[in-house]
Length: 326
Image (cartoon, rainbow, N blue to C red):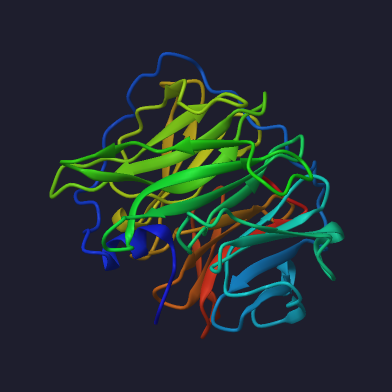
């Protein structure tokens, strides 16, 4: 089964997956991360909808969260072309990143796109992460091709001001001749609108991912958490002081309370689960994708108990909840 996450693309381009597993306490940071407020306050109900980027069907599938097991209630297909990233912001706008280097915006999280933005011609296909800040600024990841091979040599995050058709800024992620490019695997925001990015680099052994912080309009990180993850996955803030970090290669999802050192609890997941994740706050259910398995898994967010695979048989590239929890 073909998947198109950036980490998978790098592996296919002669890089190897990050090795080793993190199990110790988080490191220290030079400043304190605050919790996101770019979320909708959700009360207990069963009207939440789950949006899954199904790259195999070239569509965004929509399910009701309380009857997720195969109960498809709608699709978004117009303006979608091999969807690799999906995001819903607090204004109920759906953002979809497509493999063919563009992204689309959908008011009310469905229907006809209000805007389609083509990425710059110098970036490689595979912009699989997308997120929107509280002010409507859109962030998408992109690969820069090597001048000789055409394969992804390094990565950057393109920042688009609200309604803009060209990026206002480019965040160039680090590149090391010894370790290779820094790979973005998750993005979220803190209370003041700073961008947080889960980044990691290639090396034969002993590598670690970490979460870096970028102030608004900054092109270099201002801080990092020092979490010591063994692989990259999606990240998010929940309920004011919990940072959720997926570590799919080590079969764990960490829930880290802030500020540091805080406490850390672990949700144990199947191997490869957690490439992307989302939380239904009303039902306290965490959904995590396993693109290599073609499945979406369900876990009780508070207890960590699994419900098993609730969606199977397709290519779940990314996942989002409406109303959003993070």
